[in-house]
Image 1: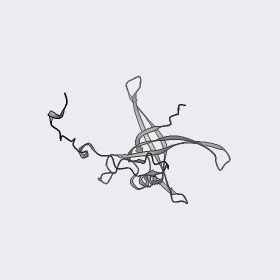
Image 2: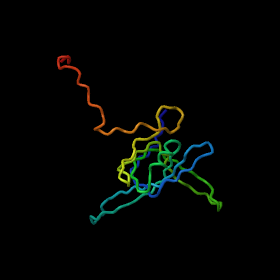
Image 3: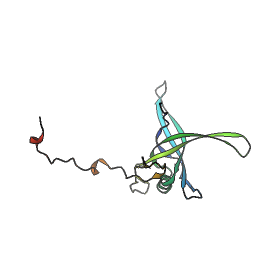
Length: 158
């Protein structure tokens, strides 16, 4: 049987500082507002910008990292899934919300204070528990080890 795909990939900037709360069990829940902007040309050749705002939620260790390292204006790459919620407001009216539940976070660019940001955090795959844990930071091309050249051309069979 075919399974569905619910995947969202965003690159944008935070509109405000993250808001982190903790459950009674100690799990972090961090919420951010992320702006993505697209540019297109209209019929007259003028550039038109359109900004979309997205509600993003991080849970567990990823929520702790997002709350600690992200700030208003931070540029981030986020992967996650869409979640639609229906709830009744205080006025008794049914309301709807759409959130992106993040499972991958990469901080792009430098920090406003001039330092480098950590990048490459996400949900540990294959753990079976669904908890978010820190993943090893992504290596930059210069940090990757050089290929092993410990064989002679005579060792190639053709």
